[in-house]
Image (tube, rainbow, N blue to C red; front, side, top):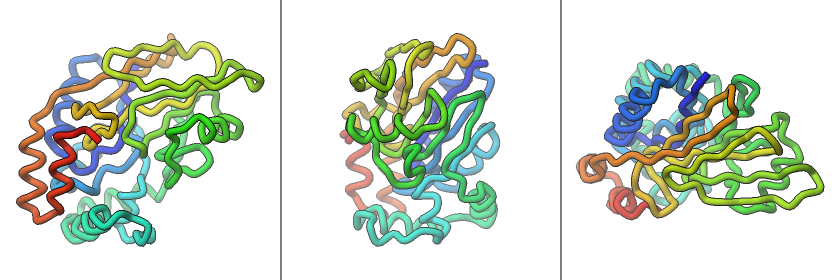
Length: 246
């Protein structure tokens, strides 16, 4: 089976539409979403509806839970907190029902792969961007290969065995990795708000039979997404960072 792995859409409709277009050209069997459909961006209802139509697996993320009022946002940055409150008011009854229907599940599994919004240790909050954190996760994860989101950075961590040093690399467009051996912790990057200095929308193709991961980036009309943020009255900073990719 071939799965498309996406994460951190953040209510960026132009980016989501571009990624779904690329996925449709790739003969993908299923789409797995690792969470954060909403937050930051100005099109939460449109993104929720598309994801509901397209995803075979859909986890909840911390921004989704914030929009539902189910977690404390006091630790959010000021712009993130403002966007969470705006999203809470902007969500339609349909979107609220769909997000609530995810059951607060920030972790799961599919085809023998562990799926987490943030990390195997803390599926909601932990940012895995350093090897020491990755090592802790590899030590406790139930599945040999785990997929994570949350950091908005396309990258991977791998270890041949428990006695080996962890390898960590960013995964730019075109990166392909064989997952046949060792333990893996893999982030496909963010659809709607990349933070690895590549502003293009990110997604990953996963061949579950051959155990191959391929990282992809897609151009999208950033200016349309940014303009929507400004017109919605959300912080200018959230629009500006879409052009910067960090």
